[in-house]
Amino acid sequence: MSENNQLRDVFDAIADPTRRRLIRLLAEAEEKPLHELTAQFQMGRTAVSKHLAILKEAGLVTSRKVGRETRFRLNASPLREVQDWVAFYRKFWSTNMMRLNQLLEEDEE
Image 1: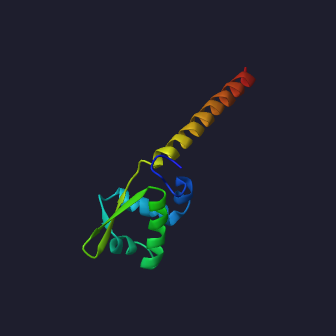
Image 2: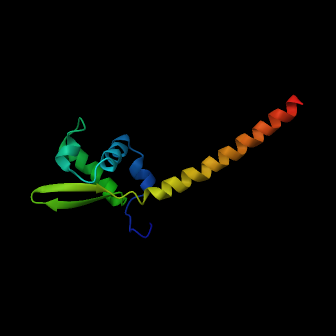
Image 3: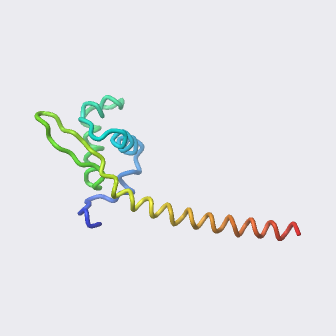
């Protein structure tokens, strides 16, 4: 667990396409109420709420009550862990592709 006291692994949270779509929707807006998020899916409010709960456990989403409405906001900072992981493999593949290219060029000579 990281310093955000995350209860769920970020990679586990983003593994589901519905949760990735929720992240995208929240990234496009400062804040969205649950009913607006639910309207974007062909599933009920309870199912969307469960996905949001998983994102909250991973520290990716925060919520606040405004009257009877719950509004959600993206906290993208835990995604840095994913970005760092991908960056490592981007460098890995870039280096290996350069090596392969060098070998192919040497074979042509």
